[in-house]
Image 1 (tube, rainbow, N blue to C red):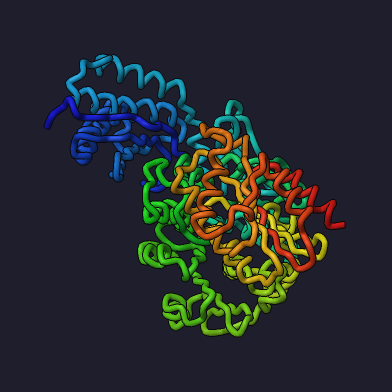
Image 2: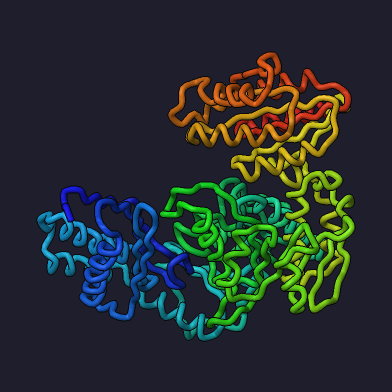
Length: 573
C-alpha cells in the first residue's frame, strides 16, 4: 500500500436527531471520500479509535455504525441526546486519528489532552433534567419533541412547550393531559407534495383540521404558516406544536432523512410514492438502489419495540420498491395502475390491503372486501385519464387515507374536487384555458417527473403543441440533454428554450438554451420552429400570444412561477 496515494477527505460531519439510515439512535455521522486504500481498512481503524474514545468519555454503551459506498464511507456513533455536538467532535477526532495513522501524519493533539477537552464539552452540553423528562415521557407513553431551544409534550391542542433552560420537574407534570394525533409520512422522488395536498383535502372532508409540512410551505388548515422547505425536523416540530393541528401529514425528503434522520419516532402510516434517479451523489447516495434504502427509512417510523404499529403504502409499479419491500418488516398496502400486477395480486390473495384501477375506477380492497372509491374521469387532476402519474398519486392517497381509518365518503369527495390548479396544487400540472387553448404549467426537474408530463400531454389531442423548457445550470450536459429528450416525447410542434438566470450556477448566458436547441434539432425539430428567450416569463408571453383554439402548451417553469401564474390567470379571463 502506497500511503502517498491515499486520499481521505471529510465531506460532512453532522448530528443525527432521529431514526436514520444506519440506526434507530441519535448520534453523529461523517461522510468521507476515500481513495487509494481498501475502504474496509479505513472503517476498521476508525472503529478502533471510535470505541476507544467512547470508552474514555464513559459512553461504553453507545454503538458505532458504518456504510461503505462507491467512493467513500459513512461512519457514525450513537450518543446521548443532550450531547450531540460533543458527539460530532468525538467522531471527527476518531476520523482525524484514523487519517493520521494511515498517512503517517504527526498527531495534531495528544490523545489524552483531546479526551479531556471532549469530557469538558460533554459536561458543558449535559442536561440531565432533559434526559429524565424524555425517560419519563417514554415510561408514560407520552409523545415529546426536543430541539436546541425547547422541549414539548403532546401534539396539537395538548402541546405544551418549555425553554430548554427552564424545564419543569417531572413530578409536577400532569402526564394524562398530553395526547398524540393521527400522523403520516409521505416520501418518494416525485408526487410527494401533490400527495400531501390531496391528503389535506381528504382530512378536511373528514372533518379534521389538517396540518402539513412540505418542500413548499408549512400549513395548518387554510393558513400557511410560512413558505419554504419545511420537509425536515424543524417543520415537523412547528406543525405538531401548533394548537390547531388535529391530523398531521409530514412530507419527508431524502435530504432531511440523511441530514438529521426522521422528524419523529412513531407515525400511524407512511407513503412512498416512487423511486427514481434524482439528487444522486450527495451524502454517499450514488445509486437508485441506495436512494430507495434512504427513502425507506420512513418504515422505521412505523415500528415500536420491533412491532409494526402502522401501515406502509407502496407503489407496486415501482421495481425499486418491489425489490426492497421484503426487507421492510411492516404492514403494507400496495397500489398499482394494473389490477393484475403480480406484487399486488400476491398481497391481495393473502388478504392484504391493495388499491388499483379496474374498468377506469379506483378500487380499494382489504381482507378480500372491495369498495369502489371513484371513477378516474371524476378526478379532475387526471385530465380524463391522460395524467397517469396523478392516477398513481390518487391511488397512493387512497391507501394512506384508508390506513389512517378515513372513510370512503371523505376520500371520494376530496378526489372529486382536487384539481391541478394553482390553488389546490401550485406548480404541479396547473391548467389554464386561454383563447380556447389548453395551457399546463409544471416544474418537473428530473427525468421521471418530466416523462410523466410529456406522456400526459402526448395523450392529449391538440391542433398544435407548444413546449417551453428551462433547466438549472448545475446539471451536467448529459442531464440537460436527457431532460430535453424526455420532454420531446410530448411531440411538440414548437419549442421555446428559456434562460433561467437565477439558476445559471456557473454556466454562461445562453449555454443551457443552446443545449436545448441542439437536442431538439438532433431529434428532427426544424430550426424555424425553435425559439429562445431570456426568461421563462418572456417565453410564456410569446406562447400566450400565439395560442389559437384547440392548441396545447406545456410550460416547464423553474423560476418566475408567481408572475407566470398571474399572467396566465389574467389571460384566462
